[in-house]
Image 1 (tube, rainbow, N blue to C red):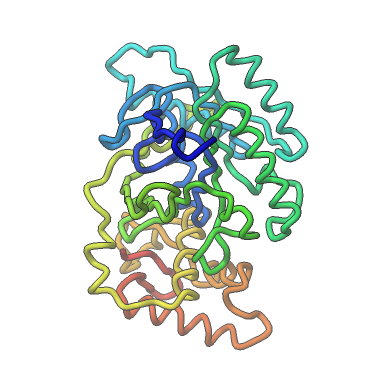
Image 2 (cartoon, rainbow, N blue to C red):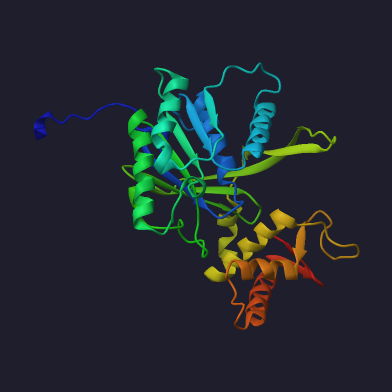
Length: 343
């Protein structure tokens, strides 16, 4: 095409203005239990409904969400969204489609494309979300060959429907970058980092975006509600993502001490440990009764498992330095053998 024949098109370029490109791969990465999947589901539901997302225009259309893990929990998540948004209004047909089967994307992407076409007919999805990369890759995330093959499979899905392909991914041990080979991030049209701030807000920051400015930050809270009861009569709960006023960490960052990457990773490990096995403070503890925490031994075991302290070295001294640093910074509280998050 000659230079003078190249004309600027007016086709909408974003799936969500300033967040996701309308067509291309996007990486949504962060540590475990930071709210990545909750946030992406909420965003994709707004796209499928044609609702503005935090006052940002969306390109409405069908969304296919591939939940490669935690499928039973996803059902509760959908019910929570339904109760929160349609409690007083009739539920309209929603062009949102859940793919609840774990697959090998490299091997099975052609079958996935076929099923989507058979289900949606002549209407193409505007997004096919892949949650998570780890559960849909049969190979090594650190391998150039394996990761390149995965990118090729995701590209095939994108090309088949000319759509957005958001991919949920984890971070490395130090929490500073997406895990695995750089061929993934090199192929991405957008990269979004997700973290929890000191008040357990879900903070999503657009780190990189082709053809648009990066730096956009969205702050959300996860509001838990009862969605039903199980066969034993016990409550089933799940979370709904709601907008938060601000990123509290940004306001307080000047007053906080600078932590080393290892200390930050150790704090994240504590948060994950509390999320998995946390309990209420023991009787007589000085910890706030509304807080949850774990024992120091449970936290130390988590650090050993994540190789954040060396089992063969002076791990007791390493662990002591980490907890003293965080306690002096008023980020954690410790009473006898119980540790909890203060902020």
